[in-house]
Length: 473
Image (cartoon, rainbow, N blue to C red; front, side, top):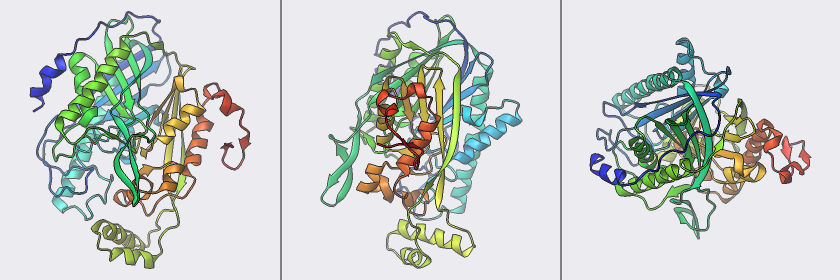
């Protein structure tokens, strides 16, 4: 199937790369690796799936970009074609890299999941997706794939680190228009359907990495605020993100294209549900990358400063044991399974967590570019907010980074309710929805990590709010 689509890809003509415009003080290396499973495995993303998958529509990949400014410690960006790579895998990757003598500091490692819903299930991600425990043999194959993926991420990061060469970094931005808000208000609540008037962020930030002389494209890195849910087939497929990666690497076979996801938790690709639409979206995105990298771009200077801070996001009031027992008798298998698993925790004497640990990551390339990386399925309000509070011409916001523990609603979405606000927490195994106010917890944490020179004048004039650690709005 994939090979039949190749002629359409090559029919697009590429202009030549522009010559180098800034001196090289960077080193960079890029690598990618095929992570397609070689055995049947259950796919994640849709609870209606009942069998393991043994069909491959397209290969899937992990892609790594290693960066170093002068003699500073290296930083690594990696994208993985999966619904969600958990924090536990990220931690293990860093541990294995250190054991191999290729240490990457925690705050300098950004792992992005593409959130394709046509990739293998991983241990610890969406554990209650199917409303029942997996059969033991299926769970063994999920665990085996998780281990294989961990090893392959380590290898591709190691390869990228080993291939670093003098380089130039530039960045620019474009627009792509297949994402639309998917929260449509109806008389019975919010429906997952195209909402033309809902908020969206169609920006396509593009990082370009070239050799020191500007003649060779080493890598491109982009992100787009949209769910990777064009497809619902029970086959391995990278969806639009994977197709954009394939398109770019066919055009530039000696380079690596890293596609991440922005704050797209409440955004869907349209049209959808057909293979041709995944191809169309991927080609559209790749064409925009090519347009951007063949126009003048803004040079990125170092140093690359990286910081993380973990905060706790409190849950709403937890159910009582009696309420758990009532839910365990629910006719909905997902509700019942979720309750039974929490009752088992209580019976073992375990405490149900009152809050979720949440790792906020902020990078800035000197004064040139601010990158905010947030875990989870983050709704679009966050990127729109940060582009108001910080210079929108220099601000890049990603979701699905370093962990995908659940949906992260804004205050608006939390108050409106619906799937992104509460309903999806069951599938992620979280005890209940978040408490009101997590948006300000996250935003104040980001604000405390962002250098003042990125803050907009309007935001600077706001008075400090000692309770939130941020500002009054």
